[in-house]
Image (cartoon, rainbow, N blue to C red; front, side):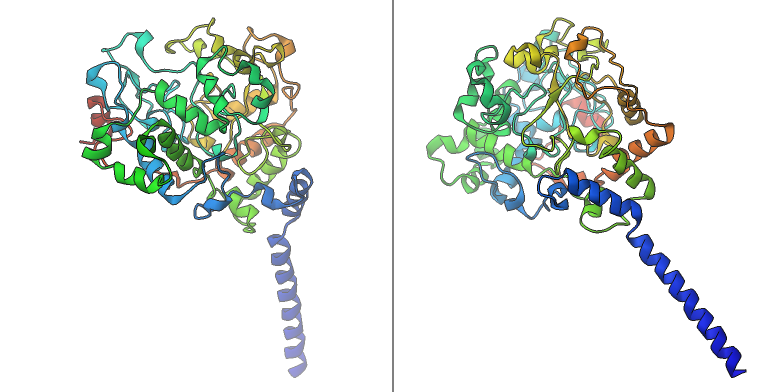
Length: 455
């Protein structure tokens, strides 16, 4: 009886040992190990840290703009200003004054992009679902509205961008340092590059003009923003403390903190190997391997190549003018040339900035021309490698754009990684509960208020 007991006990120990070994193997699975090796090989410093986004509390770890160190005071002010409709005081029609904000075209629930195919600030009314109901006001002619010729880029991960906008027009460093001779020549707004600032700060100086925003005594004193400007910019003298540069610096500091650092991919990089499903891990392997996405989407925000600098490519997609509802654009719009419209170099024609790819699940439209409305459709487009825009010469199409030969299962896996593995579910942490004006935001026109159930 004792012999039988010990025999059974020994068998039980062997079974437990075997089971325990399986658990340990599962925790550090072959797919995890292979993915880690791939990332180390592709990283600049042979470290997974090259892909990790800073925590929101670590302001010192977030890339700051030249001359614009990130402080909590600037971020607090910028967060409010970004959503504050009282900033929209330069609307063309008096009835539309103080009815729009930066967030009109960069909605958190749409991954800080526009909820509609084309962003409309001044001259737009309505909100709908995550901004998808924005439309032109009857008070405006089409030529009067503030609508751009390309879909607004996501604000996520912009801290890692040197030259901003689809054409990379703004910023004195990076790729723009090579084309200083065109600053302010073809596009007067780019004269601001001569201030020597980075793209985000330079763009926001000019952007607040383009988007008809400015400060005044109502915003500063009646509403109460003056004290926040005083706290954020104690070194600015006189009225410059409340001017356009200070406003840009506050907005830029806030935008630089918009990091999707709660995505499962970020948790996996920090050591939680269960944060990604097996399908998502296989998709990540494709992203950094066979599919070649990493060649343009690398670094912490997956919005720049492995080497330093921004990157511009033509992947042959349609322009915004190809959408029947698009406003203030056409097939002859020079903005369809992308970076070429800025530099006027033949080799830059039809090339557009490579965007970041976090929270793409929330984006209702894709590419600069909003030509796709489904993430799997985007992956299938890249897999096919066939340009859809016949206005773009074949010689201008990127060498990286070619058939990928992914199987249907691999398309599913890559789509799953993009949709879920790179999805931060809590971007509303970057949205204030209210703004100092107390009004509805991101829009406060009557139709938007009705759409949002806000008064």
